[in-house]
Length: 298
Image (tube, rainbow, N blue to C red; front, side, top):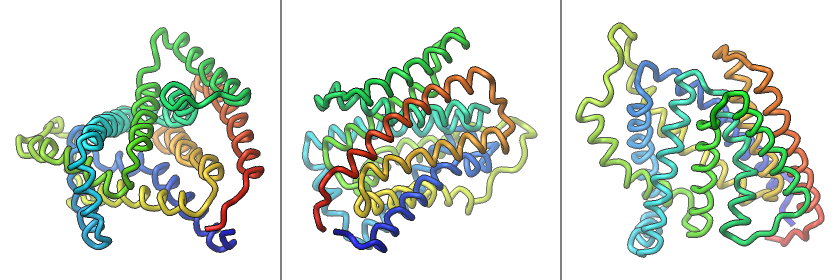
């Protein structure tokens, strides 16, 4: 059985990963007046440089090469690349257009979307707790749609793109570093071409552009949480990691309200209340199953 210190390090790594993902909106706001497309392009290029260095240091290039030379894996990575690019772009747009609350809502919905995707694509059966949890989430989304007289596009697309991305990556079994290396490598020509053509110029009088070091920080903000997450997944129960994942969107929600000044409307409270109820039911069931499962010594 893993030692207590080994498990404690895993928990700290998980908390670190989700905390960094939670405070990401603060970093994205600091990049204004750059457009969402320009921010995404810089994030891709700086992440590629950092991932390339990490892959060279830890000799991950053979795994990345094997992934892109296997036709089915390469095709799956093209799909995952499109999904993660869409997810990143929409999340950046949500934060910098004053909709960080809806962005956080998307990541609260995501675990319950994963349940449905597992049922549809992996033939996983829904138990009673999972069914009830999904129904609560569906009620929350329906309430928001009725109040807005429109489908809540931002949270649903964020949840679906990230859920489908995770599903594709789970099915192909490519490691996180080499997988993201291939994905950023596929996106890099488009990102570089976009910036070389001038990108999306900020409005006149919108203030100075961010410093180069701040743009380069995008590589760290993308890669470090992923590495921490991977380390945590190897050290602690997946059920524990599943509970930690709510740290990120909770921090984002608090930042949206208390730092960005976005209004928390009564419909938001109702929607979050229904989704949190579903998440509590799901998390409790997952935790109990994890405690009842036999832990295999490593």
